[in-house]
Length: 161
Image 1 (cartoon, one colour):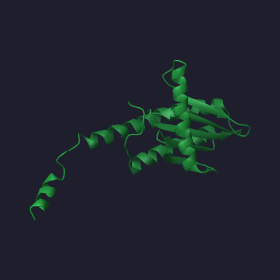
Image 2 (tube, helix red, strand yellow):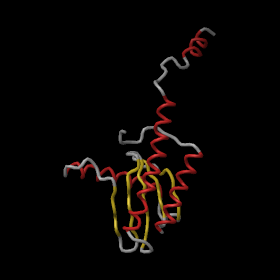
Image 3 (cartoon, one colour):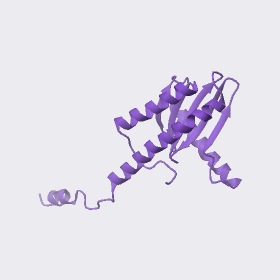
Image 4 (spheres, one colour):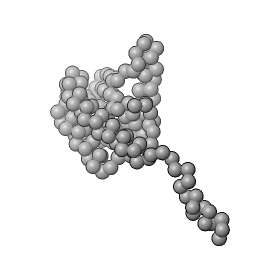
């Protein structure tokens, strides 16, 4: 599946399944927040504690961070880094790739550990990958091949009026 943010959308049921998976993860890992960001830098969803920063700017920077690290991985002979970890004195974040198009960002503090976050996120990543892969496939099937004649009949009718 290509990396990137081709046009896609999800239903209310898709969104509910995503939120349920993230809420379960936050409960099990004792993390503060989970954000989903597409590779183009658009915020897809936020679950948990409301972040105290501009989520739009954060989403853009997250996508840029992941993209820069993809390039660093290539420089050392890896195809990608599927996860990243940034540790601060009080706050930390763990970023993980979902279906090569979405980034899961987990914000956590000293109420939990990186080990617990990494352990509990494995199942969540599998579930989200399955959900997003299904959404991407559904979107591409619905799009189908472009119809170059769409609207041509209406245009011909207007010409003769």
